[in-house]
Image 1 (cartoon, rainbow over the protein chains, first blue to last red):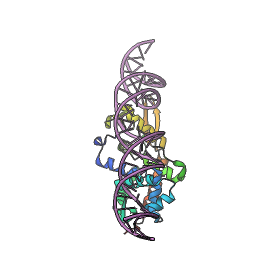
Image 2: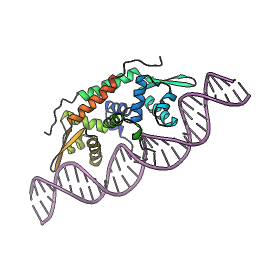
Image 3: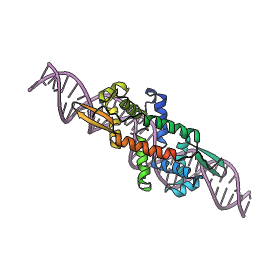
Image 4: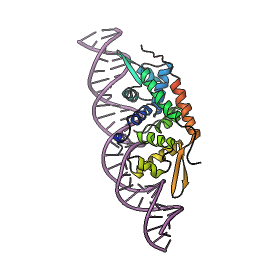
Length: 109
Length: 109
DNA sequence: ATTATATATCGCAATATTACGATTATTTTT
DNA sequence: AAAAATAATCGTAATATTGCGATATATAAT
């Protein structure tokens, strides 16, 4: 159906999935990397760097904002985007936790 | 168009996006967690634990296999799935690298 | 006031994803 | 050989995502 059955999963599983979506498209990875490099904080700069239409970049920014991993500071007529530190930290914890939980033991050797 | 313009991004960006897709759905997070806990390696056990149809679980397993993060050992008529250590390590590196690259400095304070 | 600039949103088309029943394929068990 | 068990695949429906042109909005500059 294209509709995820979120109710059958735990809060944690749904949150990890949502945080992962921030990184699950190369354009969003590129945006996050640019924001970290601090070379392009303003939306228009991101549009210049990425070969994507302004509307498309804006849509990816909206998705990243929905997840909470970035925040936008309105500075008319511009908007300055940056990483949202607490949520970034949440992502570090979440991914770190699951990625470290595998000890290298597989059940079918 | 629903079709990602992979050609305008770097190999690394595309790979990170792909690895992130492994975690970008709660069912796949649940599957990976179960495989790590070693409680359910066999496909049928996963179907029992997740409230999803067998066909749906099988589809998620296929996607995880495509990414390479799990492998399936055929043990007819069963298939035993487990984490694929080298790709899991690749994911740890990739996410670790990008997540650690943010130093807490934001450009719009 | 008018114009220019910057970004968000709308509407649309194309493609991808999620989910599942039904079927198929393969191997074991009987 | 027939039946049972397990998992993959097919087909299909519903929804989501990606991308962009066009438009709307809001402020700054003229």
